[in-house]
Image (cartoon, rainbow, N blue to C red):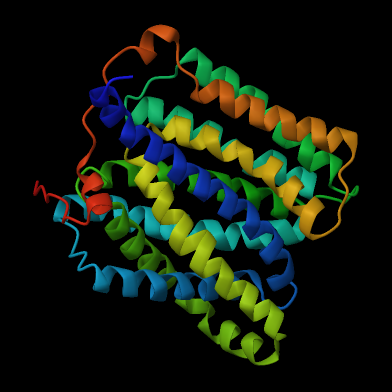
Length: 323
């Protein structure tokens, strides 16, 4: 491979690495949510997580002199902040307390499918056959994993509705975030989106203060972990990768989360998965591989120039484009 080809593939490799970091950290969040959710209510947990994330992101943004996003980026930042950072986290925390894991997996994992459809329609990304086929396989795998680990719980109508709200806000938040990344850096989009999400959750401040006074230290540390790693770090690497690929492909990548959750539960919690759970995890990973693969003809084409967000990798300030 020539040096020019290696240089051209560097943004793609970095995007894959960033997406991998996101998926692993989001998978780890399920273990922490299980602990923190025993001491914190859904709204308080979401607010505590977002405040922790905003604090960490704010420090990084200040040290790196990230600057204020241009006006063209603010609509996407604001909408994704309220929907994805705020409403999504509250709805997901609440919904998973009311439904069994199988129902939650089935409903919430509609999100990536909606993301691909909305991206194809609103962002003109198209719906490649490989993407649709891979997502179908992954969705089936996610449903198998959830059902095999559900323990036979009952699903309430409210719980199903909340999981559906989580799926809708997740998909919509990603689709509106994508255009914002054309004008602002991943750090800017994530920092201000997280801050807006925290502001939207401020009505739960009283609950957070009361519950923090009674919560065990382990639950509070898990809440802080959720804010620092699955939120501050993972949402930034997500934005970095999203700026360099389509919303549909990024959504398909998140189907690796159920498989990684199974592995982490096995290693960290001694929860030995059954054969059906392992089969679902394999389906999830196989579907991700199919959805992110490209025809041989596409592999030989020259890569597109990297977006302005690459300036963050080199330490330079990204170019600001006013509307």
